[in-house]
Amino acid sequence: MGLLTNILLAPFLGPVWGTRWTLEQVDRVVRDELTDDTPIKEDLMALQLQLEMGEIDDDEYVRREAEIMKRFREVREWREKFGMSTSGGPVRVAESGEPEK
Amino acid sequence: MTAAESASAATETAPLEGKYVYCIIRNDRSREFGEIGIGSGARVYTVTHKDLSAVVSDTPIVIYDPTRENVLAHEFVNETVMREFTLIPMSFGTIFRSENDVRALLNSTYQAFTDVLDKMQDKIEFGLKILWDRDSVVGAIERDNDEIRRLKDEITRNAASSTYFARMQLGRLVEAAMEEASNRYVNDIHEQLKEVSVASRSSKVIGDRMILNAAFLVERKDEKSFDEKVKAISLQYEELLTFKYTGPWPPYNFVNIKLKLEKAT
Image 1 (cartoon, rainbow over the protein chains, first blue to last red):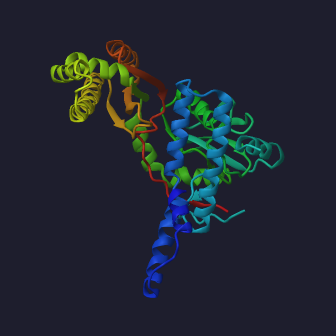
Image 2: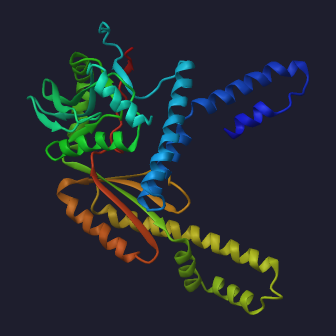
Image 3: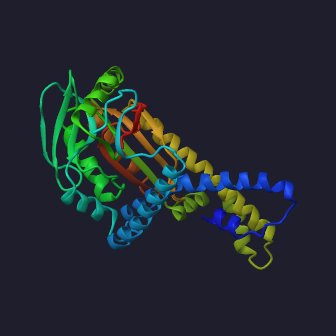
């Protein structure tokens, strides 16, 4: 969350006419960061590799896996808030028009 | 509560109203694969449409976290099915609300599934990750590269007077030689495995010690030759590289069907 922190903590200076543009940019950047699970997947794969190579033990793995799962769930929540697609969970064929139960 | 715990807790309390789909196979009759499903060992069976079947188990409607436990359960079912069938793996966590919804998937994607099953018939995947031991590789480079060896000797001999510039130059030469070595190893290994595989796909490397993260598609009948080849290569590079060799897997990295699915709330 480095970028996000920088943006949130940066003093807000600048002409008023720039405000709208800046907010839109910030909005886009923040949204991209909140909804991207690529770095989380990479962290999970790196963690798995560390376990396989015997660099960490099982307890350490389980502890860090729990943190990563929490981040996955946060990203999923943001994606849902922004109306973006998510993986997993209940699905059906898109154009089937099957009535819901 | 961890994700695995919350998912298994849900399995005990919530009604098993969904169908978790593991893979698609060519099969026209009802089949059982044992009580090995995700959650807490649910019964794994088939839902069939014409000559295609989805391999499923009953599940509450939950979102499964990709924990090791859950992912291993998903993979274990696919491994079991794979002993008898060529399969198209579904992505982790896919749940349909009813058998009818699963049949709708088989029906709407019938042609694509059939084509891919034909293409993947009797093919399996192996994963190969290769990591290097930096110190050994640097050692090998210093042995083999005259220019680097000379420069290093010079710096060592004149430790006091050797310049910052000379050290910088040595560092740069070593870096370049390492990149060249990495490419040379990877190319050589790919070349050797080409004879015993149908296709290969490289993914992004993980961490800074990995130089290759690849999947190989292999004919079932060539499994033994592929195996032997990998063993021979790992002996050849024994001193420099570590091989992480896994499989056989379903063709995870060689099947890419975009399913038209929407959220069923």
